[in-house]
Amino acid sequence: MAELRAETIVWTFVLAIVLKAETVYVGATLMNGGTEAVDFFSLNKRTTSEPFAPGAPLPWSCRRDSHWKLLGENHYPSRLFEVQCLSDTCWYGHYNCTSVYGSVQVLKLCLATRCSDHRVPVSLRRNWQFVDVDVSVGCQCMR
Image 1: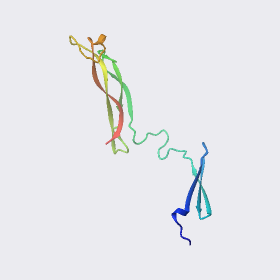
Image 2: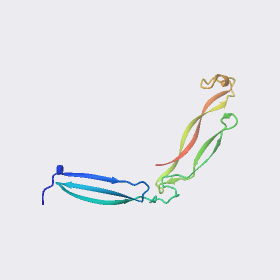
Image 3: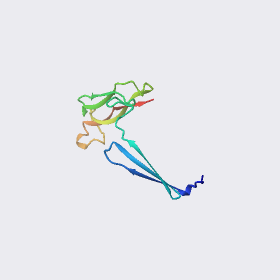
Image 4: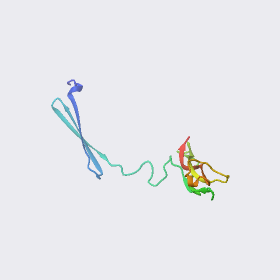
């Protein structure tokens, strides 16, 4: 049998893709010293979302519910949308569902004699000040 050298082997791959077809055909041509061998094989388009059933919750997702967090009439806005984690565990019980928090600045009615928050417009500065409010914005699967 003749010895093959790396420089004499040329691989040429031809890929033919037909959009929206169920099967994609791939041809590979091997040229070796003037001889040519063609091999075709097919790849089937994936039609299912295995191993997870369609519509079923993914193992790394956490069940959650959303509701309005009421801040009271002395705040503007007086309510913020918040997320609450309903699941305790995820990923087959190996990880925990944890709330992810974000800080939002809202206006609060200033009950002191004079407020001096320089971030508030001058016309509102006497009666309002900014305060930070922590809000749960989502659930995360983590250790």
